[in-house]
Amino acid sequence: MTDAPRPVRTRPRWPWIVGALALLVVLVVVFALTAPRGGDDRAVPATTPPAPTSTSTDEPGAAVSGCIGGRERDAAMLVAAQKAAPHSANGAASFAAAFVRWLYQYPSPPASAVQTVAQRIYSTGADSKKVVDYLAGSPNLSGGLVPDGQPFYVSTVPGVFYVESATPDKVSVSVGGGLVTDGALSATLRESVTVTVQWEGGAWHVVESKGTRTTQDLFAIGSAFSGGC
Image (cartoon, rainbow, N blue to C red):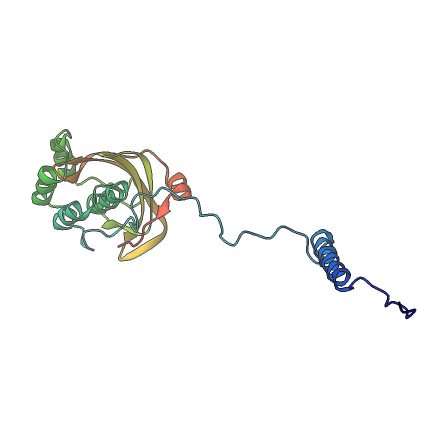
C-alpha cells in the first residue's frame, strides 16, 4: 500500500451556475411585470375605433331641389317636375316647391295652363274645379305683400322647406320662398304655404295647399333647398 495522499473529490460547479442564471432570469421577468410604468397612465384607445352610429336618411345622396323641372314657371315645368320627383319625402318636397313656383305668381297662369294642371297635377280626390274657378279671378296670392296688379313671382333661391308629416304615399310639406318684384328679389318679402301631395299612378299629385305657418316660424325651422330658381 502507498501512503500517497488521495486526490480531493469536489462536486462540479456548473449545476450551480446554471441554477443561478435561471433564478436571475425569473427575477428579471417578475420585476418587469410588477414594476410601475412611467409616463402617461391613461387608458390607451383601441386600435379599431367604434363604428359610428348610423343615421336614417330619406335616401342616400338625395337632396330637396328648389328648381326641379327647370327654371320656368309654366305648366310644362310642373309636369316635368312631377315626372322627375322620386317616390320619397325628398321627392315630394321638391315637387311641392315646383308647384308653389307655378301657383304663386301674378299675372296668374293662363286658363289653358290651369286646365292642364287641374287634369294632370291634382289628385283624383282633390277639388280641382275649385282651383280653376279661383285662379280665373286673377287673385293676389301675395296676401297683400305686393300691391294688387303688380307683377311678382316666388323664388326658391332663399327658400326653405319643412316636412310636416309623411307616410310612404302622402306627404305634407311647408315651402317658403322670396318674392321677386320689378325683376329683383326682395330682401324681406317672404311667403309660406303648406302643400299636401299624394302618390298616385307612379307620381306625386297635389291634394291641397294652404297657409299653416308664419314665414318667421317656417324660416326659423326650415331647411334650405339644394338649389333654387
